[in-house]
Structures are given as C-alpha cells and as structure tokens.
Image (cartoon, rainbow, N blue to C red; front, side, top):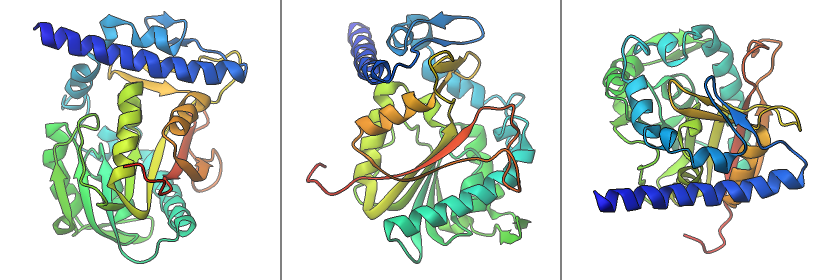
Length: 299
C-alpha cells in the first residue's frame, strides 16, 4: 500500500510539473489558465492535476463509463455519444485529412496502422482500411466495445460512397489502454488517435506521444483528432467532464503539449461548420493534427 501511495504521489508530481511548463507557455501568450467542470473550478491546469478527488478515479471512472452498456451502447451512435449524424461528415473530413497528411509525409501505397482507443473500430472500418491500410491494430480497453468491434468491422455496408467491411481479418483487436500501451519499435506508418487524448493526464499524454514516436516507421505519422476549445484570455483553458473523467484542453494547451513532445506539425485542419463535412456550430470545435518526429537520434 505504501508503494502504491508513493507511485500515486510520483504521478501527481509528474502531471503538475508538465502542467507548469504548459502554464508558462500560455502565460507568455497572455492566455487564461482557469478550468472548470459542471461541479468544480480550478485556477490552472497544475491546480487541477493536484486535485486528489479526481486523480484517484481518473482512469477507473473512465473505463466504468465506457463499459456501461446503458450509457455507451456498442454502436456508432453509442461511441459518438448520441451523435451518429457526425459519422458521415467526420469520415469525409478524416479521409481527406489522412490523404493530405500521408502525401505531406511522403507516404504511398499500403500502410500499417493503429486505431487507438478505437471503440468498435469505427475509424479502422470507415477511414483506415478503405484508404489502403494493410493491417490495423484496433486498440480498445473497454471490454464491451472491444468484443463488438470484430463483428462491426466485418459487417459489409457503404459509407460515404465507399464499400466498407469484410476486413476483420486485417485487424488485431487488442485490450490496450493508451496510458499503458507499449507498441513495438517501427511498427506503424499511421497511428490514429481520435476523441481519446482527453482521457490521458498531461504526463501520460507526453509519454504516449513519445511511445508513438518510437512506434512509427520512417515517414510515419501520428494523427490526433480531438475536441479543442479555441484559446482566448477570457474562456476556460480547459473543461473537465465529471462523468467520463476526460479533459477538453483548449487549443493552446493541447498544442503546447504537442510541442513539448518535439513533434513536427505536418498539417492541421479544423472540422468545418458548413458544407458536406460540417459539424454543428454549438459543439466543441474539432481539430486534426498530423505529427511526425525527425530522426535526431532520440529513441
């Protein structure tokens, strides 16, 4: 028990240290540091990561939420929080962005991919496999979603004019939480992490980015697509979801963490609020980032 308490203290110290580095970057830009949830408010990211009442249940409450069939059915509507209508415009934008990012990285042909925190494999089925993935590791820690993923990926239908499905044989379905995932070196051309990095603490986010760096092949890319509040001197720089234990970082906060990882930004895109790729204007902005790391001898 003493060793567990010490480990928890070390993790809290690591998160606070990372948050303080982010805060210094945000202060330099004159941006607000405050955050809130439906029930509480915090003066800064480091203040939030010191909050033991959240830290103690950060991951356990998240997995309990996603394994609750009543809260999150193993369907497209379930994994999208009741917004199944977002699937089509999301798929359009993601396919276009992945093509753009692979071109920018100098990739061509078939590619090996990982779909991180994949739910039922929606991105693997609708984006990665249709665009030429030869193999996809579908990584999902929630048992209920993972157990449904193989049948979902294999079911044949048409999404945005492209026949999808029948491809479960190209996938491995793995129980791998992001904070613990330890991929082999040089395994993937594309790692896709959508609507999931908010479940990582700051220190675990940086560690996740470094493990992605090691796992990518030469010319490999990481795509992070997530809710991302616009940054200002008045709006909260982060918002916390009390129910599923996730944090929506503002754009400056998120981009500061990406910068701390040493990643090179290949391209970025904001999900539009008009046109065929439109998301509703009254939800969080959603932004995509394609990242790579240059070979500087760091492993």
